[in-house]
Image (cartoon, rainbow over all chains, first blue to last red):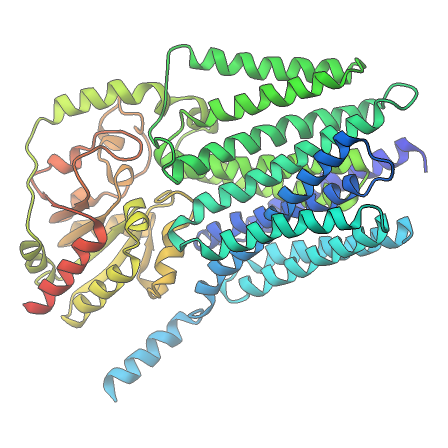
Length: 112
Length: 464
């Protein structure tokens, strides 16, 4: 494939991704906006793939070595930290998801 | 692994990311969605690892252990109340990585014969520029929220010109690179100028504007990653980066709309310059005296009220008083008081920050009222208990045209019968804006750490 063919294809998926991003996000309730920000924060940790490609290049110069190593380190912190923080936030939402049932069971305890 | 096979596997990763975001539409599935996204991320890493073969595998492993280890420990150790700065930190390192990739790519392609393709050099310039701004800006946001540096807006004369100078310098270096000047130092200069711009651009922003900035920087990192995808001709970077870029931009717009201000106003406007004079004016105008009350007095007010509304703010997060607030609310409910929580969309330092904290304390969802729902309730509220909120209840936003927050929708706590403000001292808030609510005759102040004050209130209410 020529470079331009690939470029046109890449621009196509870029534009589609914009609409998809907007579409998916508009369905998220305000209640979950913090986990949303944290979750998207984890997703852009995908930059680790690029960092690995750079550090995995054969015949690297010293500059590429150092820069690539730093990039993989930073990107790994982004990935792991991002997903762990998001998980911790969502854990708190999950344990009492059916809010009405929780209330009902508390009422039950109160009367029994 | 062939190009086609790896791209197909990357497509699976993309689908998991979309599902992760899709599942966030309900608290029931949100956590599962995040786990699916994490699995997709692992898949992408494994595919990439197989693709690049054994070259420098040990270096990659060591770098991953260092970075991942730091990320895991930091994310596990951090208290729920310190989440905003963690999000800023992890966002920043992602932007930094995108910027470094651009540097490495330019370093690789420059020695090749012929000039680099325009689209590739444009992508390199964009990811270096946006990634560096995001890195430096996020680090400053982190330092401000962690209180390593002063949270209030830091301003000096000619600030906008200095900032403008750095960004113009960075863009000029970028244009020269795209136009075909083959000099690696141009990119170093661009990154240097962009880093300085990132620092200077976040420094003057404070207070209630912090969530907007963090969300914007999050979108920036996404865009930088998408540009990185063009450099490396890698689909998963383009799609995942752009998903974050688009959604982050939308979230930023939604938040500034909630504050009734434009993005430009948040970033370059009011809080920087106006606040100092406006604060002086407001302080002069207010003039009235502040009434402070003892915990016993407040306990009596609360226990004999029909309806009490809690108004949480950043101070609740700082004092980590969410569990104590819940306890106090339960105690009041047991005495037959109607209790609810009024949540301002930009209370705290992240969008939805208060929701997360109160969720941690297992506050029932039906008690959480958003601004539109809460405001009509205040006139029939006996006591509005403001726990560490300031700007979001400041009546100047309605009345005082010279106030930097004029026009921002607020919680009208001053329309309730009585207001109790829990506050550490009379220092103006994070944003440094004076609040006439404190001088309102209906208001009593309960000074002290929010957690200690609430604990005292619990004991006093119990003793009644």
